[in-house]
Image (tube, rainbow, N blue to C red):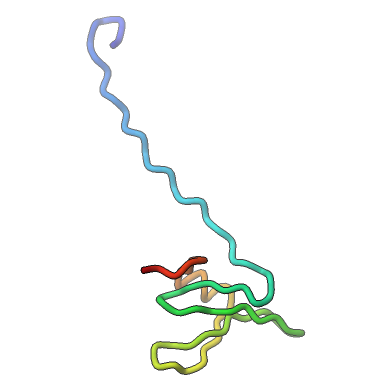
Length: 77
C-alpha cells in the first residue's frame, strides 16, 4: 500500500531466460538436434558435428549450423 492508502498493483516477475549453454568442445562429445545424435569430430582443419539425416545419410554440420538448428545434451522425448 502507498501512503495514500491505495494498494499498488503487484508486479509480475518475468520468467528468467534459460542460461545459454555452450557447445561442447571435447572430441567425441554428443549432442542431439532434431531427434538425431551428432558427434564432434576434430581434425587438422576444423571441428565438425557428424551424424545422419532422416534417411540415414551421413551429414556434417558446423558449430554455427548446430546452434541455428537448436541442440541439447540429452535426447528429447
